[in-house]
Structures are given as C-alpha cells and as structure tokens.
Image 1 (cartoon, rainbow, N blue to C red):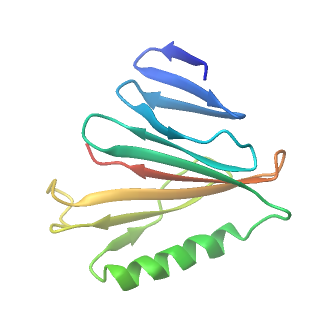
Image 2 (tube, rainbow, N blue to C red):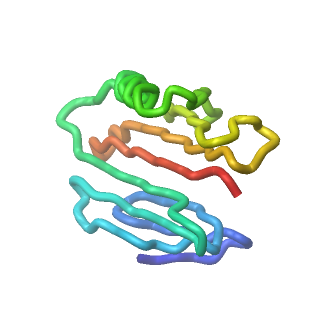
Length: 134
C-alpha cells in the first residue's frame, strides 16, 4: 500500500481508490479483492472510517440503498436525527446523529455519515461510513 505524506494528511491508494486521511488514522482491516472488500481505519480511540466496495453487474439505485438503510436505522433508534450531508459530486449520503444527547452543542451525541457512489469505470459500488465526531 503506497502512502504519501501530504501536510497533515496521509494519501492512501488501494485497488484504485485514493483516500486523503488524517495522519493518526491507521489501517486496521483490509481486503485484497477488487470485486468485493473493505478497508477500515482507526485512531487511538475508535474506528473512524470504513470503505467497502462491491462489483455490480448494473448501476445500483444508490438513493434506494440509502433510504432502506435509513428506514432500518429508524426502527433500531427512534431518537436518531437524520440529515443530508454536503458531499462531492456523484456521491449521495445520509448523516445520522444519535446517542444520549442530540443537542448539537453537546459532545455526547455521535454522528456518522454514510455515503455511496457508483464508479462506472470499474463497475463498483463504493460505500463509506465516517465517524465525524472529534
């Protein structure tokens, strides 16, 4: 895995994916198949990022995947708050705030962003889950 230092970020390239990540994040789990796999990154406190990829015969309905995920999460945690995050072009996502305190000024709440993108050149669905809390 080539990693190039770039200021306060590490650039990680893996099976055609290129990620710019905070330096404290390290790979804790990785897959080597280009058809289906995942990468997981953690800092000293917890897992911060999971990237998964799956080969697709045809373009998936990313909006439907995210709405189905949201519906499942609402059943599990009826107090969770959902929003649409700002993402790069071609990506769609869902932000979920949950935990004992949902007030934006309190650190007890957790925030996860799930995003997905179909990469037509490689016919892969790329999904990312990021823990955005400090």
